[in-house]
Image (cartoon, rainbow, N blue to C red; front, top):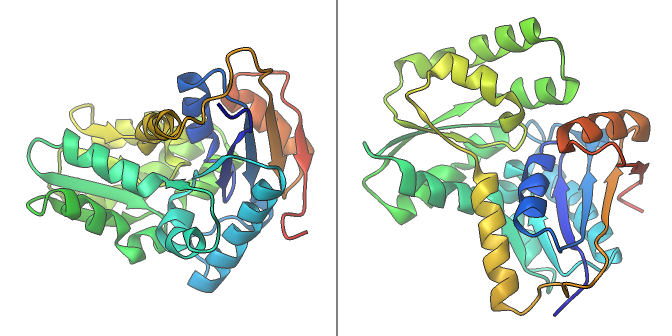
Length: 266
């Protein structure tokens, strides 16, 4: 048994979609979330910048004595995870591997489309991970740099619909039955995305598989918290705490959340 919290990091707020699934799956576990809003989006940054910024968040979580770290960010997973995993003793769980597994299990036609940030798409991480599981699956990748900032800004529905519709235009001519939301911000735009791609497409949100895999790891390594241990969820941002708190309360459906500002590099 291990009562230490689970750490979750993201470039911004998108990782909250992963955190929510983790809390639902393991209600007895405490968590610590850090969103690097001051430096988002990661998708347009260099590999070196992404690794450095992700390392800052990892070190912050380690300072909070977490027992496992979830990269609730596809860009950080695709670009920085393999490097940082060699630097720390804690296990890291990434969203790309979980999303790829879910996509390979979901597709019936063996045609999968992936939308993600520029960095995630340029890394071809989903292509490699999906075809590792089934080489016969055809993977089409589409960079969507406007969608993560759109989710963070949370504008009115007309703006959301217009930006999503324009961004997803390339998918109209693509052959796929399964769409991977390759950025944890995208589930926050799920309704708008479905309105564009159609109800017949299967949507894969890696967060579901991440929560299940985390559960399996804790069970395997005997890391579950004691059932009588107090549960606490802490939220940190490198951005503005007040705005972070307002949006996080809305997304997590919890009016008691209080976000705290932190300089992760410190």
